[in-house]
Length: 268
Ligand SMILES: Nc1ncnc2c1ncn2[C@@H]1O[C@H](COP(=O)(O)OP(=O)(O)OP(=O)(O)O)[C@@H](O)[C@H]1O
Ligand SMILES: [Mg+2]
Image (cartoon, rainbow, N blue to C red; front, side, top):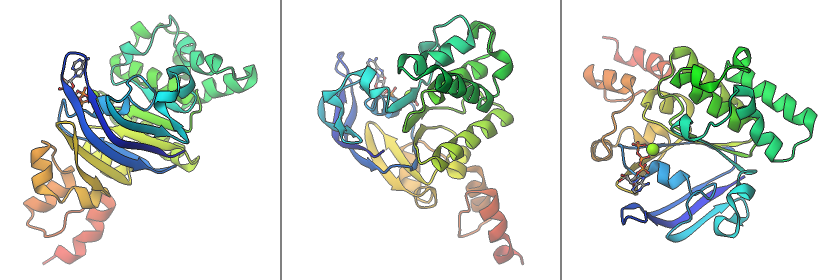
């Protein structure tokens, strides 16, 4: 399902203009990442997709819907949004109830709902915690509960707000596998991230935001060579790119594979 932002501006009731004219078209099935400094407007922007916010100016399209014509409940069948802070999203006393809430609420039949809940817990490594109170889990586990709760809704669009924050290596790999699986099912994945390695490894398109505006938009290999943009948005290139710079290479490989491919050309 396609998504688009057309001249979107958003001003908070207190007067802060957090999004200042964003136009973006995200085609169905794309792995799309948004990066940028704290307060750049990333969360504010994506919260338009499920109607938490309506644009002060401009329009947001989700498939053939304009978000202003639909309720949060209607949009939640199309857009699953995993909150940056899981404690804003989770409310139940058992992990399984948080994860089962979405599919139940969307009116899925029992068999489908049960299968989705089981698969979501499995994918997020939480099958053994189904009966646990979320408050007894760590923040990184609660973040994965929040992710499972959205996966179980089986939406064509999945929005992840800083999914890897606080995750260890295994958690990051788990999330990368989920992103890959979602795309293989033709679903659109939109992720906000501060982890440039995760971004370069897992997303085919990256947008850089600063102060409510989009500064760059392209493949990670196109975006992470724009030094002026990176500096303005206070974003560092992925580690391997910085290593290549330090070694005096003219090229900037972003992933382990592309770094290894570049090695022969730099052997003296
Ligand atoms: N509820 C709110 N009321 C008023 N201003 C807000 C509110 N939430 C965010 N802002 C302001 O809007 C701007 C954009 O915030 P937003 O949370 O969208 O940024 P972000 O890019 O997601 O940042 P981070 O990387 O820290 O999550 C910031 O200046 C922020 O202070
Ligand atoms: Mg944010």
